[in-house]
Image 1 (spheres, rainbow, N blue to C red):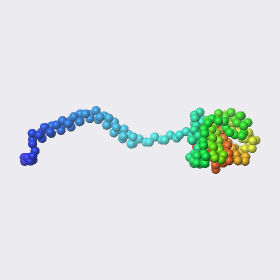
Image 2 (cartoon, one colour; image 1 turned 90 degrees about the vertical axis):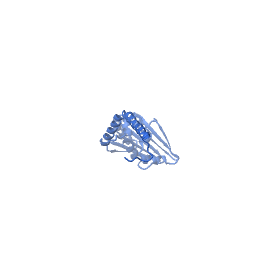
Image 3 (cartoon, rainbow, N blue to C red; image 1 turned 135 degrees about the vertical axis):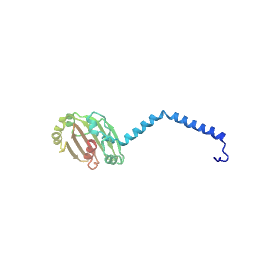
Image 4 (cartoon, rainbow, N blue to C red; image 1 turned 120 degrees about the vertical axis):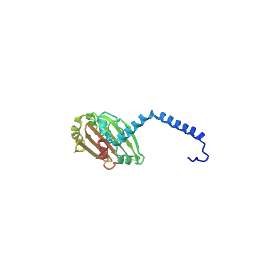
Length: 204
């Protein structure tokens, strides 16, 4: 066999043995990772073929309130209404457990409301106070008679009772549904469809 010029067999043979030894050592060191690699490949294949789990829907503020959990003002407002309120000049929001700001004080006392959250908005001109409370089942049955006698206009809207009244620059809106009472008092500024939009944010 013709020899390649410049190749020294005394160096090539030991170098080849060293390379083979290095490869063998690397294979031996990698043996513990073989089961891990096989498991990883199996998990990857299973996750690729398994159906995606259905997304769980977050509880609405009404569901959280009915379960006795805390409710944050931000979760009550749909994005469009929240943006409209926060961009109002001088907008300032405070959250508390203050009682409903309703003028129907006698009904509020009879309803024995357990306040979940009160959201008080202040603007350069006017403000809005909205309170979500838990009430007894009987509260909605007496609300229509009590509020109608105080000058409110009440109507049944599906599963809920809605009562509204406007006096001068003040509009007051009440919604009763599923053992909850949502009341809003809007002074000097009434965003368009504020009550119905807030209802959608609370009950979904």
